Image (tube, rainbow, N blue to C red):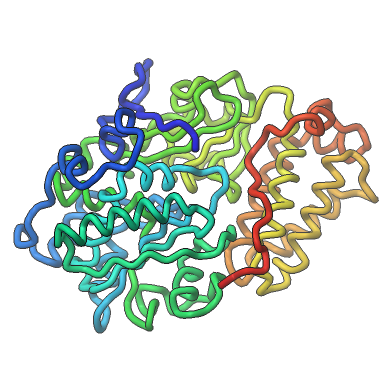
Amino acid sequence: MSQLRDYAEEAAGPGQRTASRRLTVGWQHAGRPADLREHYERYGPLPGAGRRGRRGLVDVVAAAGLTGRGGAGFPTGTKMRAVASGRGPAVVVANGMESEPASEKDQALLARAPHLVLDGAVLAAQAVGADTVHLCLERTRDWQVDEVLRAIEERDQARLDPIRLLVHELPRHYVSSEETALIRWLNGGEAKPMATPPRPFERGVQRRPTLVDNVETLANVALIARFGPDWFRAAGHPDCPGTMLVTVTGAVADPGVYEIETGSRVGDVLAMSGDRDSGSVLIGGYFGTWHATADLERLPMTTAGLRPAGASPGAGVIYALPAGSCGITEAARILGYLARQGAEQCGPCMFGLPAIAEDFAQLAKGRPEGDPLQRLARRMPVITGRGACRHPDGAVRMAASALTAFAGDAREHAAGRPCLGAHRRRHHSGGPPIPRPWAEDEWR
């Protein structure tokens, strides 16, 4: 696992936003999951249930302005209110799958503060009227499952939770962390996305109103319940308050997971991690976008702040492309992975993405058959918006951004003159991480 970094421990330069330690309190010193006693020493006790009432927490979370930290950035209070207003008992699903290969923030959170996530899940369940929390984890991470189970056992011995906590191990696929894929699997099906509507808040697990939240989001719910909305809004950007966990990798001196204030400038985050003069970055993960670093460095790390550049924080990932590396080659590697990760429930996944990945592979090698740029210009618009889920759209968005960010290299590659970075790539294993194949036909 990458090193765990705390923005608050770094020296702040001009224009930087510094973060008080919130999620990452005590992480640097323990080096292991906090037990229940250490957890309360770090974060303080939970408030009594009668302080605000069962539905009161929904209003508090809404007032805090917390948005989802899993990538979509939807207002958490709005989701909670929709589930709480549903008919019948509700269900909470804590999403700890983190299937984005370039991200390690959720793994870091569960490895250091599992009780904070469990606090948030239990509080959210009480607030929306649920009696069960399903915590979904990737089954290849045995260490993570064991740590969470130990934390739950400790809570059981302390008779802490009135809510049932269940841990599930799901197959590893890029699309299996999508909220409808989790619900489909929990209902006995395959971990593949489903068509909507109905949305989970309407009818999810066992056809009950279901709140699906990322584990970082739930950890923030636990902090908001303790310290209130004004405290939460004291950090971050007014339009997107609080802090967020960001994974910074690639050409930086100190890769790892950092806690930053929302609204921190991209350039400041890179400087904090020891950027080595990378000229290009991939922001948001493998459904994100490639950009020249200079185009993003002054922009705030929020959805609205990055929108003018056509970017988004996504899963909270910044990958700095090493100097001399070939962006077209790295984009081709990612596309090959995404093409293999499709659920194969529609034509764009079964045929469109493999065709685009093959075009990029030819482009990267500089040995194209015909004109791959013309084929890509024809194929990508046909795929966008026609998939059974968002997987094709995300892959195409990343591919299109690579053709724009590395337009000159793309033209040279298409003409049979690949750049030096493409040749160099054959002799080293650096670049965005691509998971090893694992039971790719296993969806249950």
